[in-house]
Amino acid sequence: MQCDCITDLEKRLADHMKPQAGETASAKCLGSALFLGEKSLESGLNIAFRITGDKRGFTSEKGKEMPVKANYCPFCGKPTAKPETPAEAPAAS
Ligand SMILES: [Zn+2]
Image (tube, rainbow, N blue to C red; front, side, top):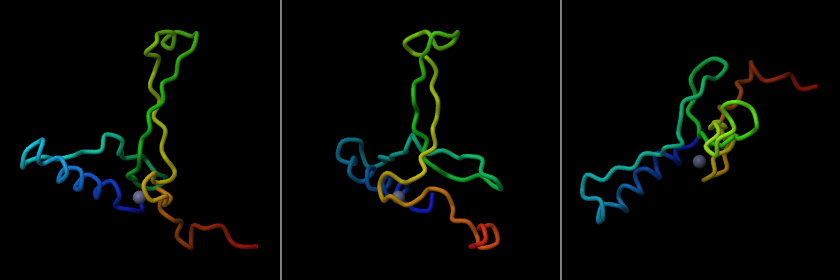
């Protein structure tokens, strides 16, 4: 992620929930995940989809869960991937 939205929201939600949850309230985004990038691990947002179908393993109502990486932060709109460095960027023509 190129932004601190998730960390910021976790802090703000924990503070907001202190009256109900207590002084030790904490919040953890369940959709944040590490993804294997081309050269390193990158943090991102994982949005789960349920896949069902008529083949084995997909026939139940539960189906199978498939994680999909968000390309943009849903809170600020910035791209989640790190920008390419000039050496990696394709040459302009
Ligand atoms: Zn953001």
